[in-house]
Picture (cartoon, rainbow, N blue to C red):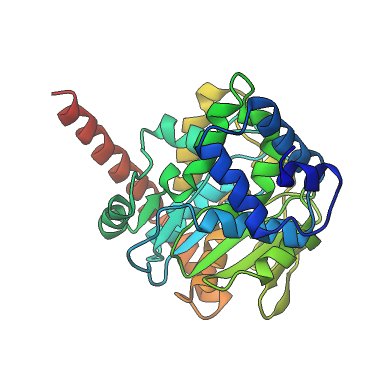
Length: 343
């Protein structure tokens, strides 16, 4: 039994960086067998380890990912932990709106673990691909002000781990991957807006956020248990400077329920619903919802100094069709590239 597995199984505090280094070295050299790999993932998914162990894990990931050649000044990422009430893909919609406001956005995401449709699944339906490198991401930022980062931002050992555990799917460990996922991706952004659902361990995530020094992290929670800001809920944003309340009705009407932001009944209607949301045709509550999330990204990134003008700019980007136009331009460009590639 390796040191990592022994430490996790025996709930030993402080499985350190050297232990994780050794585990990844053994994995890459083919010494970690399927049973051990599955047991490590199962231990992580069953009981979130202590703070020092998580810090050691994340530090080991930092050593094994492709390093960015430059910093994306003013850029922001929006990502959630998942596991909350089912909603349409609020974070992805908010990314389009924020980018349409002039905020550089580099968004990470995943396939569905606990929902029907994750952000990557939605982007596939939109016909928008993920970027494949830092240069590809910078090109998308230059052209659209928005990029959806691909797997290159994650350490390659995770891909190796997924291959070792076949036929078991990483989907079985989605709870852990969703919880720490916002801290695994390596993005040289200025800020990150992270939604924390009621299913995620907020105190532990606050500890992790406090240990991050390369970007500003805002953690968002609310009494509805969602991993997004909701205008009809009591929201709290945890920033490096302390807690910030965003109560029900602050910058919104305060009306609405979770049913107002529910996903489409069937997957075939998902794309229509999403484009209607970007156009403001899905109703006032979805518009208010993505407006306050986009505004939070704008303020966190430093693009706007205060909430009222940021919320107003978000609503304008929806009302004037800027967010929908951005989505259509990205879809059209991706379609053209596929046509050229297919000759």
